Image 1 (cartoon, rainbow, N blue to C red):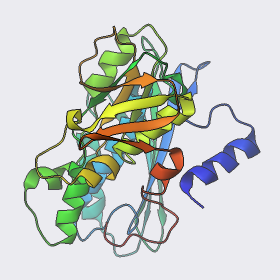
Image 2: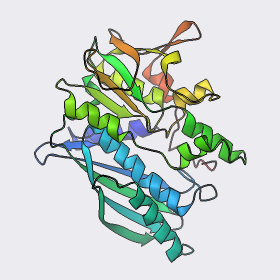
Image 3: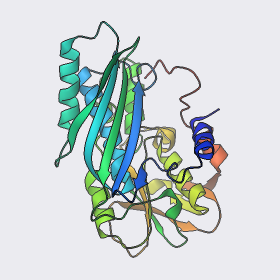
Image 4: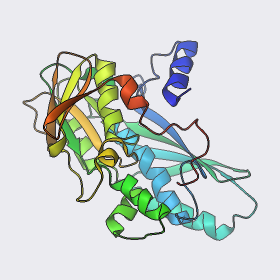
Length: 303
């Protein structure tokens, strides 16, 4: 089974209206809440990543989820499970890295530490919805435009270089080890939009975000590959399916100016139509899910 199959089972078992987006929007409290786990040799390898960089990435991925919901990042708690060989220096550097991402008043306020056979990191992030309009993957509407922020495929390219024993170009390596959440873009959208809209980060790949929004909203996204922001030399498959870029896909009314790059539009249908190499390729939900990384198909020792 795949991650989304498990999520569907959990959602149906709990009969919950909150589960589905990367953040749960608790409207009565005026907050959003999200939690992500990073597991050694599944999501990261200490052979390639320092403790400082692990701290950076652990916080950045959660801030990205909060921003993609439209909320303002506010507080985090961090739980660490650590093997016996981890020393005080590792913990100090980890938290220095984590703190370096906490800009504009974001604060780490607690957590937990336990023992384990490998390094496990679990971060809970809380964001404020005050003065913001919260997004939902279900809100893409016919006639809207598809806007992206950030470059795509660079993180996957960085991972490919690292596992090949290379440390350059540095921009790709940094994109993988020290991602930058699209804080300003998301803020620009959520603080100024009046209509319902869809927004999602590209943590599981650009095509995953496009497909998820399309299928959850019951629409077809027509996207032009040539308009997708990317660095020179990145393989097309990495641009579309390489994860951990933490860019943003926003689907908003055509009249709304939010910056970013317009790459497509919303029309009747279901799924994603990609204009690439002079032809249109259709991607169904099943097509996309068969191509993205599956956390439950064994350990990815190359990460």
